[in-house]
Amino acid sequence: MQNMKVTFLGTATSIGVPVIACDCPVCTSENPKDNRLRSSVLIEIGEHNFVVDCGPDFRFQMLRAKVKRVDAILLTHEHRDHVAGLDDVRGFNYSLKRDMPIYCEQRVIENLKKDFSYIFSDKKYQGVPELSLHFIENATFSINGLEFVPIRVMHHKLGILGFRLGDFAYITDGSFIADEELEKLTNLKVLVLNALRLTSHFSHFSLEEAIAIIEKVKPEKAYLTHISHLLGMHNVISKTLPQNIHLAYDGLEVEIEKA
View 1 (tube, rainbow, N blue to C red):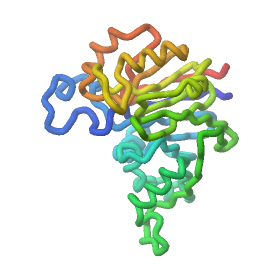
View 2: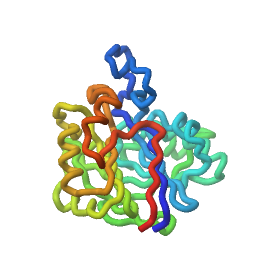
View 3: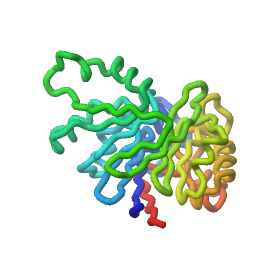
View 4: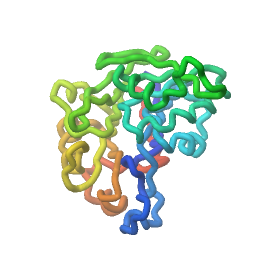
């Protein structure tokens, strides 16, 4: 496996931070690390670029990170904060002169066809995004010769996917992971896991729950994402975390050297 760079394009929950009309200390913070777009990551490995999730901030995230090429987009699930930016892949259609490969489960594909019916219409309007849909299950699959390992995660009652590539794994929106799926997360250099807030939530891990999972699978380093304003100030919470666990923030770049 080659060296890898992971860029956090966004690290917020579905409503972002700051939250509209909220005057809490986090939402009014002047620290840029408290300002979060919807969660997504860019994975760069060799000449390949992959994006996990394509939320409503996708256009700005691509511009901010100066991304010129995306080889494929992997979708964890169909919720709008993870797919609403699909219309903006048109820029890559134009520049790369090809369809954008989308990898997701069959249920997600069916939801995309409903939510973006104009993209998949038999009589397409000129200029709509050009996507090529690739059906995946909870089984290893390859993109451009690189093997991705899905991890089944429960988002309350909805089964969604995390992804492992080499020594890196990315999981968001989880509230439960079965032991057999946790086994896929052993011997990681970097694990990214969601941690919504300090108190419990029915469909997302709390900070305490996320730390417990990290301590169970023992990655060399872990980064927390999908963070709400209810978690607290970045600089304050960071000081309370174990040495190998960090709060991610928008624009953070993590280098992962090959074994």
